[in-house]
Image (cartoon, rainbow, N blue to C red; front, side, top):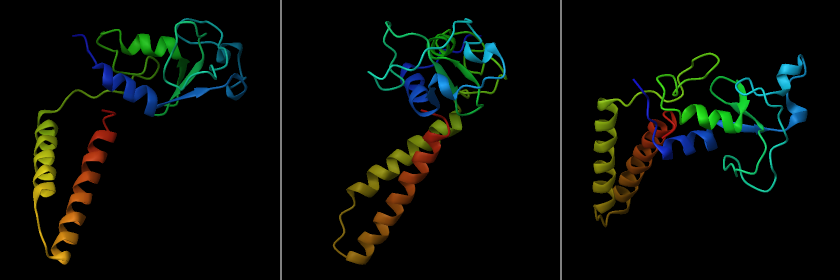
Length: 155
């Protein structure tokens, strides 16, 4: 079954979970370390005219390391792999570590409830300074829970 990954999730993954690598930082144990393991094109330095992960079509293939598993691929090949809508598109082509876990109904429901709570807390009007501080503390804690839930899923 193909794994279609939403565009915003792909962009978020590419910007937060990958690192553009200059040629000098690549391993030198073998000539194959200097080329993309998918297309076997030798890497160029990342373009300095744009911010990673944007990838202009005129750019040459550059090395990109995935934080989750430390494997290195060509930037263009990495995105092509993820957008491939294949059963394995959500995993590393080398070790099959899952980069995009399948959606979880319970997690989605929990996030929806969390958003309702945050909206409710923002709408509470209180004049007592101590009570307002306590509500603000709860709101900050709930925002942090939301950040962690989204951060772990790269969405």
